[in-house]
Amino acid sequence: MKAFMDKDFMLQSPTAQHLYHDYAADMPICDYHCHIPPREIYENRRFENIAQVWLGGRNPDGSYFGDHYKWRVMRSNGVPEEYITGDKPDRERFQKFAEALPMAIGNPMYHWTNLELHVFFGYDGVLNGDTAEEVWNLCNDKLQHDPKLTVRGLIEQSNVAFIGTTDDPIDDLYWHKKIKEDPTIKFTVAPSFRPDKALNISKPGFAEYMAKLAAVVGKEKLACIDCVTDALTKRIEFFAEMGCRASDHGLDYIPYREASKDEVNAIYQKVMAGETCTTEEAEKYQTYILIHLGKQYHRLNIAMQIHYNCLRNVNRRQYAKFGPDTGFDMINTASCGGEIAALLSALDETNECPKTIIYSLNPADNEQIGTILGCFQSTEVPGKIQHGSAWWFNDQKIGMENQMKSLANLGLLGNFVGMLTDSRSFLSYTRHDYFRRILCNLIGQWVEDGEYPDDEKALEKIVKGICFDNAKRYFAL
Image (tube, rainbow, N blue to C red; front, side, top):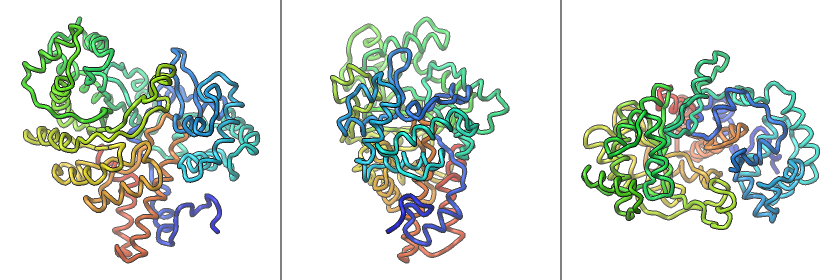
């Protein structure tokens, strides 16, 4: 029987162990998509206790922050909500999580949590209800006193070279400016352009958001569709000046419905006048804006990330209480591979298709995405169109293996840009280590089985490429 989480954790062959320890383990991290707040990086926040880091709480405006993966574990164990997002003391909340965690056998949360305790706090036991007091005291002492456990310390000891945050077009990027001006920050932090609110013409708050976008570009209002595209272009250019390497689109599904500028302008005017639009009209507007944005990304060498197939806030009662991003989302089954291909084709017709990374929350889309990639590659960069790393509910051993096997079967795994945290936690960099172990075990097994030669030079290039070098090249770091 293997020991739990030893140095060869998840590495099931001598080749896998060699690839991980000699090539993968010490590579820098390019965390090109996450949700951590740049302000906390600049201010070098120090957390008071482990519950603050893991379970979060409530913001001053009443919204919630925290790791909804952990919240779902607690809810699934029957923990009352007052211990999850409520105002119960942090020690009691932590106890409830510790008691729920042993039930998470086979869940990546069990591995991630204990990896974080091992890597950052030097704890070699396992977290459960009986060890909660010991872990609480150990973690809190280190969080309060260890210079390596401030926000910057966590990033530096994790060997993170690049962080791509997620930022709204109307953000003034004040904290990004402060980071750029601080010579003591040795890693790169860059904004990523997330214009979802400017695309969601059929959702509540659209008109109010467009008024804010107008104000940011010095306009009283955005009176026409040309005004909208001009405003978005100005903001993209500002983000590019601030070092932006990627955009991100988190849409329910990817539309493609062509329309003339005059038709799109009429739809926009209609909604801004307080009327509702049909689904077809919304898709025409979104398609027009996506094509415009794609061309700007190509011009400015910004990668376009597309996340889709999430059905959000499905528990209406809980959404009314807690708002978005609190753990009430699920996998959707929207079929829009043809629309994604049509969007890329429209951009490709004028040689303005940007580098693009495609993520679906539905693993059934893996093979479809894998076949889209080969239709739009070019000489700009190897693997210009990417199948994004296993995302959200797929961010576990089987999901990662399936995504990489699909990419290997239908494209070139060797050009994959690899892992990202997609996280709001500064302890989540262990997820890169988790991914690297799974990667090396997969490749190692192919070598052990005689399905790929024991070619040291080629294997080193592939492993180091997927861990960091491909992303460094792709995002022009």
